[in-house]
Length: 155
Image (tube, rainbow, N blue to C red; front, top):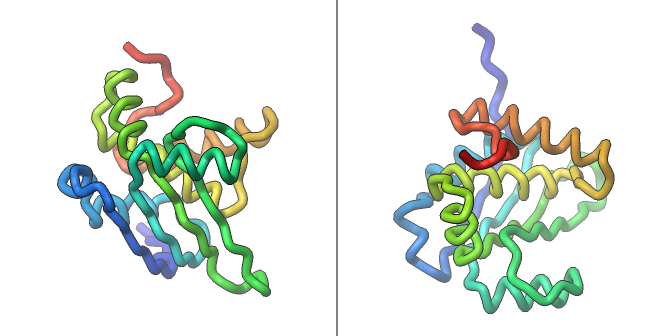
């Protein structure tokens, strides 16, 4: 079996809220990021509380609520530069959504990390064809990690 070379990754993880540090360890997060990585990248995953998540969503998206994941991409001067992005995950929203969807926290977190990493690499879901492409990638990447399709209805 031929293995694919690993993409170069520089990953910083910030846990201002230490409650998630035990459940969502750096090795798990790195594994999930790598599963979605299509090119070299320099990424920061930052877990924030609902207050900070709401402020960021309001300032950058004009939406006055805390959302589960926000991705801030920083374009390089050339196409050969690694992808650079901050991926902000709101811990309170993440925990609440996992409970509402009857999913283990790591399964939901893996989905949002993969989702954020794909956004960092230029994928979006603004129209139906783009959404379908991004969802298909997420489903395949999560399956490779052993997680079920996150878009199937709750049991």
